[in-house]
Image 1 (tube, rainbow over the protein chains, first blue to last red):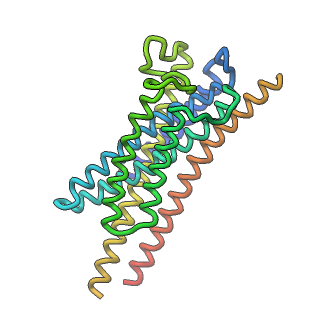
Image 2: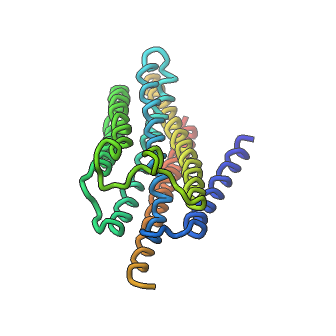
Image 3: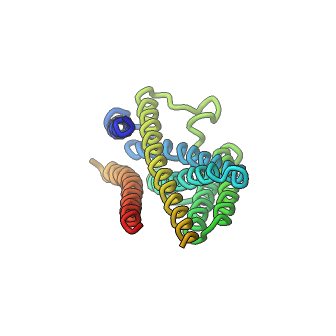
Length: 234
Length: 48
């Protein structure tokens, strides 16, 4: 039953990815000023939105770990796996954002990069979570989990700053697509549909890899606990 | 197709390809990690 549900979810996710791609490349019309290169937007913006979501999941995991580490160590380990999975998937999505953005910028602005508020805060966010993953990779023990949880919480503080950066400061980065005032929003229904399908597709994909990463981490926690128990008994 | 349109096309293809390489690369890495974990689990259970 569980295997069938997972198989169905994978099939639906693949179908959504193919449909999203088809909508973005073949259905959505060419934008009048940027032409074809604007189609990068259909991957860049959904992945940017979803990287915030995965970092928020990591934040919940980090807070949960700190809250449960003394009273409920079993829950704390599960929260820690959530925090790690959220951070790792968030970094993957943020990497996509930091690569697709400059590719668009080179054609639209004539430059690969500029140190404006949106780009800089996004790079800082990526660096914080890469350091979170490096900490987890090269340190060990329960203190590492506590330090990682604290770093995860600090990292998440950058998310609202990234989100608000092109509202608070004048940036070269385009104005917010949604929630940026009366002029924001996608006016063309075909463009809006292509955008919406890609948000859904990348969300489904992200949940899939997040669940897989969580499962792998839980398994490695169990193996580590088993090995520690055997070492004590020997 | 003029030169601008060709460049636009190349940059769009590069962005889509980079996205897929990163996402699928991560999935492959996860799959390898999972497989190694399963192997170590099964050899561990054989030992004990």
